[in-house]
Length: 483
Image 1 (cartoon, rainbow, N blue to C red):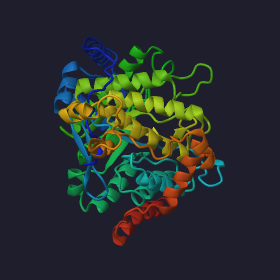
Image 2 (image 1 turned 180 degrees about the horizontal axis):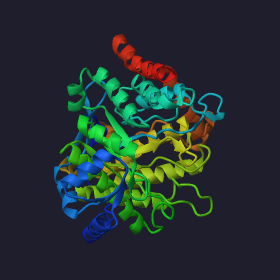
Image 3 (image 1 turned 180 degrees about the vertical axis):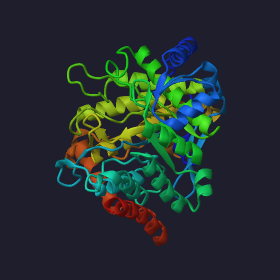
């Protein structure tokens, strides 16, 4: 197990009191029972009707006892492997992991700095860079493969990722067929369907349609993952003042109701199948109408959803490391650092969107490197302060006494690597040393680091026959669509 998967220790952010958690939960149950949700998938409607929900056309009213049954059987802990079959993430209380953003339309070219549409090679490059960054734990498709056929672009994106990183992958898909093909690729890599289900290295990202709707494609993907017993994230798309109430409490009720109704459908299909609570409720900026990724309300609501996930004893997925800034600048660094620290303190299991700028529209490899540095700092903070005979160092203090120093003491040599954080790119020189080193600002160092990783990091390659098998699935789907 990697050292940076430690539990949250002495520090934490408990945003909601037990009474507030209970009130949000009960209000969400009231919404499900009296307002209901729309479900646009016939098999799910039949299942819900048969198991006790009140169904009127596509309108479903879910009683509280059905929610409680689903919560009782959903797993509180989901181990996730990597491409090599090693367990590398444990989605459970106290474990914090960081990963990239997903499906950006644009990128800043890593070499000439031009803002352009993303292509499949950008997805591969981002996966390779993330693979080489120590503090990045999982990978999402940091770009859309716009140069590939639109109906198979998600397959091309998964192919580009799985061939260029050994780290766990969170993937997106347009429909059930996409998910089926991506699972087929993953089964080739894992060796068999049974091996993949026993130690999955991929997680589907899926969404309801806010407010309070489950589309046919979303439910079909949810049911397929349940059937295969492969993990799925179900994350609401509530925006304050747009697809949800403008108040955080009201928006949280809509978001919770959407996730809980998705959980009911999922667990009715396969009890105990791995389900990850999604946490997000950003605001729509009333001046610009964008969905703001950097707003403090977005971070606050993410932290609230993390707290709710602990109340439900479910693993959670949330958003940080992103910015509304249109370039990799001071605003980008401010918003990324603020969000990563707060959601780390809140205890988010899967914290995604590292490398996102432009309100979710653009990827920046320099931003990803900054977030890698930030994740290291956040993990140092989450360690808290160890109080033990060794760290109290009373005998050493007595030995050195007033006016002495500790630099040459054995205790310092034995403990400094464990108790001090050493950033790779942050400047800690004085002004003269910084000038002598070239007066290079952090943004330039981050972009240089991204290029260095892309050019020199070696990703452990899949065996040729397995890599060819993965590519064949994408090629077969492309060919079938042409025919």
